[in-house]
Amino acid sequence: MQCCIFRRRRRPTLCPEASSSESAASDSDNFYGIGKPEPASGKKQRRRQIHRILDRDGVEFQSKGIFHVVQTRRTCAIFLLDFFHTVIHLPFPGLFAVTLTVYYACFAFFALFWIWFSDICHIGLDTYRDAFYLSVETQMTIGYGVKDANFGGCWEAAVLLVVQTVVGLMLDATVIGVVFQKLANANARANTMIFSDTALLEVEDACTYLRFRVADMSFRPLSQATMQVYCVQHHRDASQPRGIRVELAAMQLEEPDTDIHNGIIFLGLPAMVSHKIDYNSPLAPDVPSGTSGCPSQAEVRNYLSQSPYLEVLVLLSGTEESTGAVVEARHSYTLEDIFWNRTYGTCVSINSEGYHCVDFHAIHHTYALTQLSDPVYGVNSLAHGVSHTFPAFVHDNALDSEDE
Image (tube, rainbow, N blue to C red; front, side, top):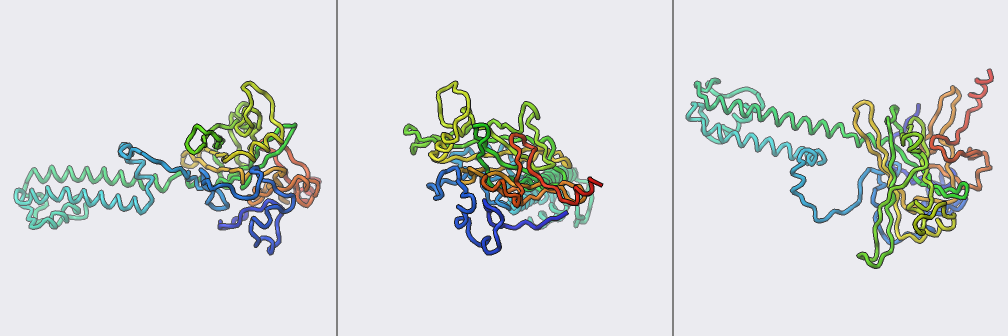
């Protein structure tokens, strides 16, 4: 079992593994390398600057799950109705500051009552500072510094003692619950989900398919994992502000098939996700209502190259077995991340001991279709249309052991 420390590395190249000298070159240097990768945008140069909705700033160019959407005219008072979750989402320094402020406020509030009852109950507090110390001692139960622990039989002190103790217990329980939820945040589990760096457009039976790969690097894969894919794109519309209309549309997946597999993805091995681009797909050009069938490759290519902006959002959710928490991993592909005339290489092998081995770096590897006949790339035969079928190779030792 091999494991490596994650580090920020160069984006996986779109051609076979380069030498050490070649790997030092920038992506723009080998953009049109072997097989001439062709992005769906139809051009190499950057378009006008539009920030992608979902970030790709994580390790291995994955997403941290942060949506880059500017929100305006929010009603901040609404967040006070959900104070618990508002506090949970604070960073740890902010959470510590809020906790410290609340405790100080609680100590200071009850200190007012202690100095008020000082003469009545013969407590002997001379200043507010003495009352504040007594308030801390009472709530945190760290031992009293008063002459008479019974307060001379004063009932006011007994009532105040009970009230502050109960309030302190409730405050402690709240803080412990918030910290626990913060530490047990299931979003951190989403970091072990890895998506292929690029998505591919492949033509099969005269239809174009959008495909990408996903895998779970954890030893205990998510159970009952399901996936939702959406397409956010801009349409030119003179009637809208700035002449752009933003459209959000759901994308029907060919695999995993919701009718056959109930949309459940098995993550014990890498899975291929496939979307068929027919006339109902948001990736297809507009046609009259009721038109059936699939657009040609040229039509899809022309439509995507003319699109002002397009981003495919991927949401993968499942249950973490140990805690029962729901985990959601997020990823996105823009037109610059989607390529024509390429296919995925091998990421699964059978080792000499007969175990299935997954190479998580190889999940990103893609090759030009013209290279499929070359056995050095290990992509002699590729299966399409089934999410859990992918090329694999077997070590010679494993075959020898089977013959024996």
